Length: 458
Image 1 (spheres, rainbow, N blue to C red):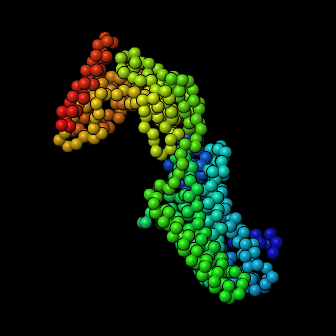
Image 2 (spheres, rainbow, N blue to C red):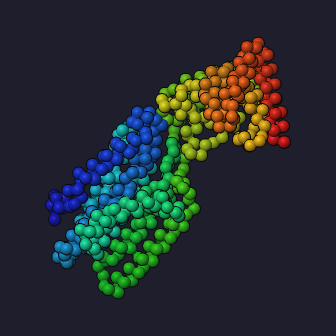
Image 3 (tube, rainbow, N blue to C red):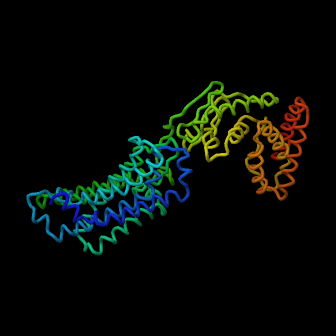
């Protein structure tokens, strides 16, 4: 049968309007339900992350449509007695020719949203970025083999639609049940990517091998050989499949929820200046504002130092977006701040950058509790927050600081307005003092806060 005739008779072609329509609907609806188009293109834009996000809704659908169509084609081969009519041709060749349009349909279900997302974001994918799609394409082939075999064993009018529904729910429901390893072997990635991250090979190899082992064992049943050879081959393939599946499950059992192996730090950055050298992520959404970001950092540090605040100028200030999901803590010489998040189009702007400098640069000579225990004295909060508010006002970062404290006061105090008013009053009074007196006040306020917190915790 030539290609034109095969395509004309394949259910993959005459059902194309249905599954292509579903792909388009989910792409424009689901992918932009939480993230509008304007927010998506404003960054951060990382090709592996965008590919992973665009595939999230389509893995299960691709496997389901492939299995259902393959069941139909497998049943047609059985009904027409095709293998018996062409004894000179390999059964594998006959199956491959028959399933080619089906596999192509499954591949398109995965490729279409990826292509549309890359066009939408104007990203050029790397080979590593496309690996999740290639993993899914490999599993499409496996599900086509399984579906074809099922079509030989069951009536296709019933099993074709039922198998598609079963596979869809099998893939989607494994992400909601225990044990956790089921999520990682299903073929629909349970691990999302952050900016600068890529999947490690094992993350994609485990789900592929888990399903491909079953498909390979099933394909051995079509082996054209003597009965004795077929029995031995089938037994060996079944044992091998079980071993591979157990090894895959054992490997994935060590992974947590959404915590498959990934590697971070692959995104590039652009840097400017020295002491501090400021680096911001390329395609993070704020790379065009690097000079402005550095000016804000330098100006804020200079203002704090001029006011007498003991601030150590870091050697580098880097964009925390570059570290992936595991954020690095700042040290005295190397700061990690959310520069792209703050200075990007969706962030608060330069006030957010100054606020990050405030929280990283201003230190107290003691530690403070991260939470307030019931019955614990909180007198130190007024002195601590008044000192911080005074420093925030110096660099015009008082609005985000007050916004943060309002939220925290509301959940900790019965009189949050009175506490906030007291903090603002103390900081406002300090701002009216002479510059040298303000520095003395700031240091005394720090000492008071430390003394009170030590009394509260002893």
